[in-house]
Image (cartoon, rainbow, N blue to C red; front, side):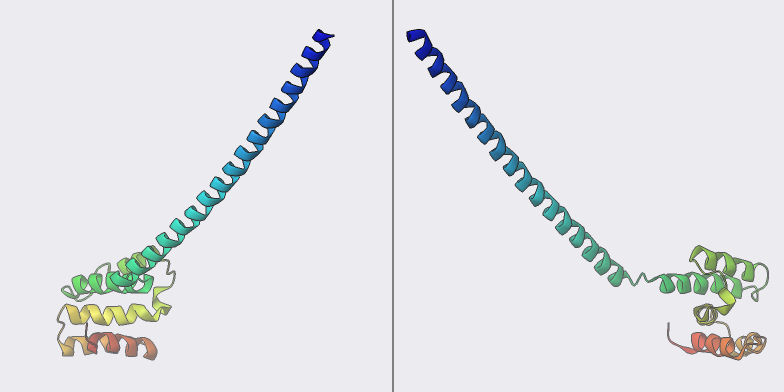
Amino acid sequence: MKLKILLLTLSLTLVFQNCSIVTSISNSSDSLNSISNSVIKLSDSVNSLSRSISSISGSLKGNKPESLYKTDVRDITALYAKDGLEGNFQKDISKIALKHGISDWEAYPATYIAIGEGLRKAKVEPNLFNRFHTKIENKESALLLKVGYTQNL
């Protein structure tokens, strides 16, 4: 009889210990889920902050795609202006446009503004500018070229 009581006591002890282990595992799982959710929220916050910093940084630098394109076109125009825009000028403008994702630079208004700015940057005299300006057949492009040449850099 004592053996039966001992076995029953041992069995009950094991059952209660197993319940305790299951409860501990369940509590640990809940804690891990809570930690995981916190990490996800933190990651979202970091990503949001990173996007905000990038946006602010881009705004401060003025690094808009069109602005970068115009800067490149203006600078190459100023270099070529010394040779009367001869040589590979149009080919180089085309390469710059493609680099910036522009397939038809001649139809892109910012190109002509930037060329005008480049001529001004190179200090091309007004009479030379007018000779170049009159060669532009498209009236809108010619006007944009003049806008770039006459506006303040």
